[in-house]
Amino acid sequence: MNETNKNIVLIIDDETANIIALTNILSPEYEVYAAKNGKDAIELAKENLPDLILLDVIMPDMDGYEVISALKNSDITMSVPVIFITGLSNIDAEKKGLALGAADYISKPFNPDIVKLRVQSQLKIITHARALDEQIECNRELAEHSSRGKSEFLSRMSHEMRTPMNAIIGMMQVIKKRGIPDDLKVYFNEIDTASKQLLCLIDNVLDISGMEYGIFKLSNAVFNIREMFQQVLEAANYNAALKNQIFSSDIDQKLPELLNGDRKRLKQVVDNLLANAVKYTAEQGKISFAARLINEDSGIITLQIEVTDNGIGISAKQQGQIFSIFEQADGSCTREYCGIGVGLPLSKRIASMMGGNILVESELDKGAKFIFTCNLHKNVRVDLP
Image 1 (cartoon, rainbow, N blue to C red):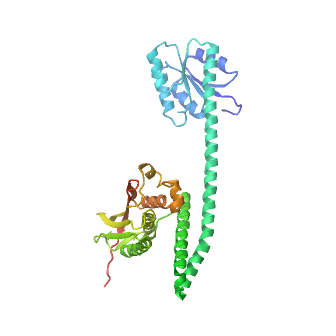
Image 2: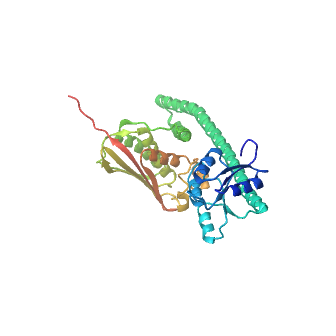
Image 3: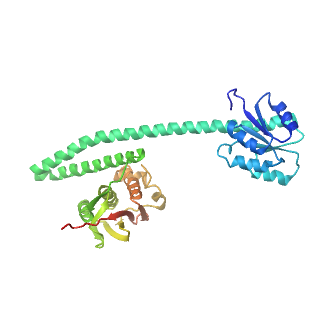
């Protein structure tokens, strides 16, 4: 649309008489440009971007089929509707034009009323399409603004909650060192466990916000993977013992002791998988942990971790939801087991960033197996003389 608010129509025809006839019909309502050959027409279309093109089929040098092909292959003009103008009464010719992207046909000799109606019809379609695009863009901007607002709120809220939670956990450690009366130990242990779980949840929300803003990054440092596993398994074993669950573990002896990678994020994923296994497995249930070296290539170790339980299981339908942010396998899980559904989505994103993945094998009421893979760099330690 130009500054006069008139739609622009480009006429492409090698016959001057046809250009004059169409210009006389359309110029009272539209801004009309014209070109007498395909090459000039393509350049003119790119410069002025018409709302509609009337294109003659039979022309020297470039015929109408070649011109429309060039127009539809250009990012600038591909969306401009084209009406063929032709004296041909050939079904095959019409089919060919429509297949190349023509919107309609106008036959010669021109009937002014038919020309106006055909042009008006195409321009109405364009007007509605533009209005729809503008509405979609407006809705997209509103959705993005709303999403940013929610993410910023979650981030601020999580930061504000983290400070007092750290204070609570710190005070609990001070009290433990001074000694807790035997009759109060069970209560203090519950407070300590609950506060650590809440701090973990807050950290997960902060990590999700960081991913949404693109500021979540992995670090790379040397760490002892066996020490990390020992720390993780001690906590999992303790939590399983509280529910009288049978917990077992198996770590591949071929795993190198020292590796390069993000220890914190690796531990975070394993913690999430083990915590879920304990949470969703009943009293006296069974949970197993296995870590395997499944590949080594050019100093890169592919680690596979499997966490298996005989808990409530996950249906095939629910398996498609558990890795989506803020989704849970079943709404009832929120009430019975607590949680807001960020642990597994966060873990899957971390796994992807580490060059791996998380898969689940499960049936409802038959337990679940989570398979986590990631890539870590093998650390070569050189003993200096």
